[in-house]
Image 1: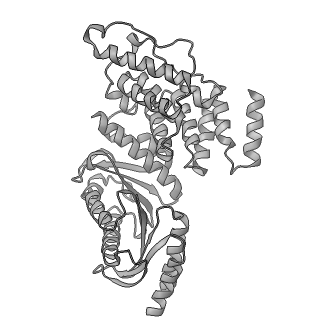
Image 2 (image 1 turned 90 degrees about the horizontal axis):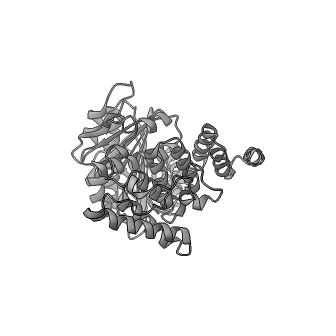
Image 3 (image 1 turned 45 degrees about the vertical axis):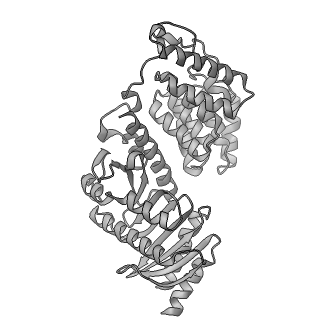
Length: 312
Length: 115
């Protein structure tokens, strides 16, 4: 392992614009050097924000850190970039299982099985998930411990990145111990509370993030103005109706649904994106934050907001 | 003024993927000059982009972020970017796969040509 880390470190140093950082982050993670893995993954994603494998690498680090919400953000981000990214689908299946959402786990495994029809392990995991789902839907069987669920904890995934979320575990999770209704809290960051919903994303870029409903009322997060004062309500009101207005105009122009708006100002970059149920997310970053990073943070903010709204 | 405006639009319209480049008045949202593919509704684009720019400018001002320099919207089938010089707003409509960085830089060059 040290040899592999040394080799990959040298490769990253030799070609900083390459993608060896993904393997290096994974090697650090497997060696238990989680902080190094996180640092390499975050730095790599600053250069290559559109690499699904990079987001997958960071998601695995987040799992090791016990931050399932952030891991989910990363895997969803990878799927936005590549809807057929198998490792991300399997990762989301694992997270769904871990929070006890058997139906979601089954859905993700079904998708994974469709993407990799010849993968026997996925097929087996999917079969067990279907059985688990049937068992959990039967009141008479709800309390019974039927079969082990085949989406184990990837705390030490194998070298095969694709198979990691389904890799054998030292202690398979018995279904009877694990199946329960998904907790709303599990969809939220550790320091819950709507104002803190985007706290970890904000910390990445000195940003402020806000979620407002279709009427411009603040749902979560906070926004600060150029002087650092709370401007959540002002910006929420300014955002009111933006989504519907944009949708109408873009439809008339034949441009389809809007994906994001970015406003470059003298003192900041403001970015918006549509969220579930007509809501809009807004992210404001200092002007010195690169535009590409602002876009990545916006996408994460949107993923977080969608998950939170879904769990409400 | 027309020659300068057309120079600015020429810079933009030569970029691969740009389907329409136009200059509009921010005050009334009307197109002043444009270079466009035949299937683009230039008047609707001018009205939408100037409205979006105006709104973004107001929002930036209300939040104390300073003046808005550039506004861009990404949609499923294309991108629209806009930047202003005085009352004039330079707008480009491009294909979705147009390089966003190049589009942004070219818009700024077009703006410089207008100035």
